[in-house]
Length: 562
Image (cartoon, rainbow, N blue to C red):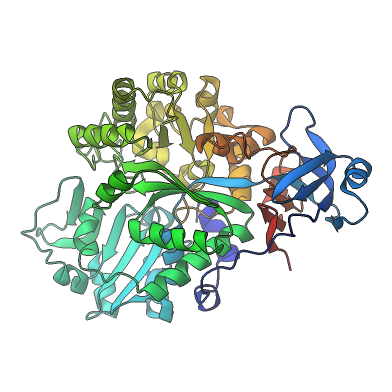
């Protein structure tokens, strides 16, 4: 098993029988606006240049009131202040995952969990023991498999599933969300056979006889999605409540949701109005499907804990399923260059339409061809619409030509990246793209040095939502055993403080919130996390076993360690 996601999988599994049965989350009540709470810790890392290290901070009415020594903060707080002693913990500004998928995380917690599986046989065993939460209608769903973690490293097929469940439709999503493994009954219900053409931007993998193998890549997945029963309202609420709780447990105070569908957004609006959102949500509207028309018509939204200001478009697939769009063929599949999920013309039309409505445009781009096309289109369209200051984002920015790294850095656009993608992909990524193209892949340091703002996330549920894993990966570029010894392409490593900034000030900047959060200073939002170790100075290996002691959002304690 390779990468942090597979090695630590069993440590971080949530028991769905409990987690997915939750109802709408209840926002913990912050102390009244007249009450001051003082938090004391071994160290407070503020990321504020004027006072980078402190011993305590005080909070009132959801805002940071003071930061300083314990004596200073207690003196200014008054004798009736509530005091919370966090012992030897280190407090840092609230961490935001700048690219996650709450609905996807909820589904993964409810469905058959396949991450960390070491073989097809193990997957079949888990499918056979599926929990009750894994059913949508009479379909069995699951997610998280990765053929790169198996000895044979080849895609599976329908036959393995048919042998166990010949009459039950089964749909199992790959870890990257860009391929679907289905059985014969699912293919039958979706009316996919040897005569079904590949849809634009998708592939139906076929055997020598032309029959579908059971693997659908990128837009071909939509053929099954069209007939898959959606979750009930009760299922959706339980899944999202579990996802939000999971995020708070791992120390996240905010999430940038990368492509929220309208049904989920309506639920988030209701929960925000009812005071039930435990985290700050910065939503990218789903610009890929039919919901985009409603989002365009209604425009931007700002509530208490919920903001809609961006739109998410997906231009290509993923590297692991060879859907990422490359300029030259794949090194391990010379007849294939990946997939564009939108034509360049349709992509540009959508970009301009959303820019004209004031949206920040965030585009999924993995392969170097996709990244070139995104930069060309964003530069041209932002100039035409007068939105060069719109902080448009390249989501993943995973494989870039060296000249495009420079262009991204000088454009003012944001590189929204996921450190654990590098440590999960490093066993096979160079096999996909070869020794030259890999020099521009997962290149955080190169992008930072050219001036690109870095906003860090996990792409959960593709990776674990735990930001400690991202901080570890950014500092080391190693797996959980510390391999390779010096890190994978170690010149791209970041310092502990740079890594922390990606999840704090970088994520805040990417959401136009740098004056409200990302640092701990008087007048900013009281969003912070207490860890059992210092994520900046502690030996990196300690991050993998560290604990989240407290998560505070807008002054409310939304998670406390048992």
